[in-house]
Image (cartoon, rainbow, N blue to C red; front, side, top):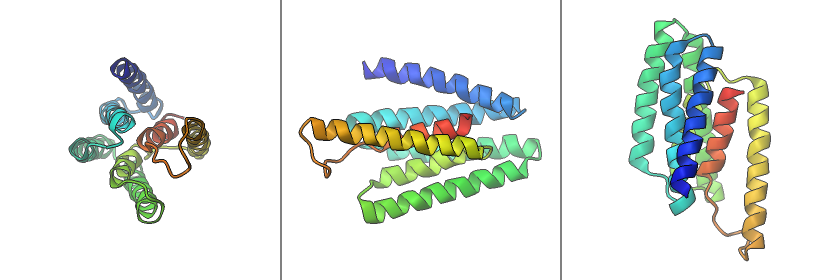
Length: 173
């Protein structure tokens, strides 16, 4: 069942990221954004099932997305977009690193945050706000379901899907 859900969400993410690239006026951005979105979905599915984010998948996706973004944005001379992608990846990774250090988040979530930040080079303020609201809603629902099923507030939850939802919403809004 999760394979079907993951594939369906992956297809929707591919379409959404392609439309986002076209909205930004660059057909060349479609390939890096589709790769970025597919990697986020794949890592999130792994995290939802096993509470582990595959290091190899995320590292390779960071490298491939970075190279493709550099080529696509460099080809168009969009150095501001490339700089914003690097800043967003650094900021997201830094916040997740603080959560890893002080709030018991996993280090895979830190890697996933760096990957997620790469796709935010052209995110709008509105998109970022909608993403934060969506992440708060998803965390609240996930925590309440965990407590309702007999867990406590200390029961670990998979953060990968929450992070991915936020990054994808921010990028395509």
